[in-house]
Length: 112
View (tube, rainbow, N blue to C red):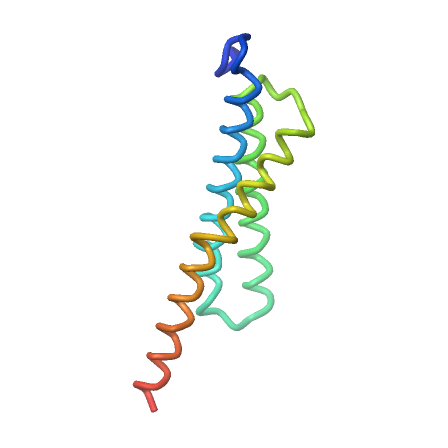
């Protein structure tokens, strides 16, 4: 398999940026799966949806590592993925969750 970034000065930095992007996408996937999980009250269905999320996140991370550097595991790439998840949860994820909560409260008030 051919590496996404050929050897050079910016290889590590480009791989780090790609791993951060993978983390951001993982955060978006988490919110999307949370929307799928919301209407179901059953713990069994919630568990199944959670397992689907974990499987999708694992496949995404594995494919990203394969695409970045032929699957070579580097600690800094996992740290970059974690950084991407943190950045998503801290900024856009927080805004999205707060708007969902406000909308849900507004809807509950309208139903009363």
